[in-house]
Image 1: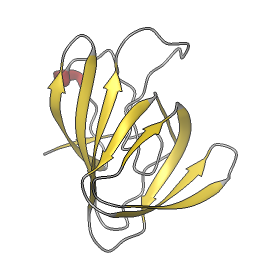
Image 2 (image 1 turned 90 degrees about the vertical axis):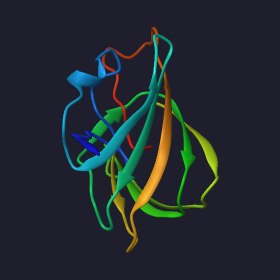
Image 3 (image 1 turned 90 degrees about the horizontal axis):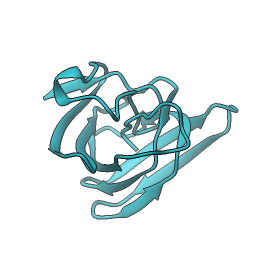
Length: 129
């Protein structure tokens, strides 16, 4: 499994929406590209117990939780929220800048479905959330 340098959310991110799989950066969160074409990127992301990600920017995406999750998101303004998600839950995650932390004693895993295309953001990020 490959690792990515995630620059933001609790579950978490990286700067590469336009990059090919070979160009993906490496870092603390484990990921696997499940599917990619000109329209969409689908990533399976895993965070080890108590793993933290640095502050990063993420583009809008759908997240499907594969495992139950207990995590903390910290945003650029310092605000924090604690989240619990159940396996099978699906949610929309808007563009945001954050860092994340797996608060549990087990790995957490989710799938991020990231649309490609034009956006108001100058830089796109992929995140574990």
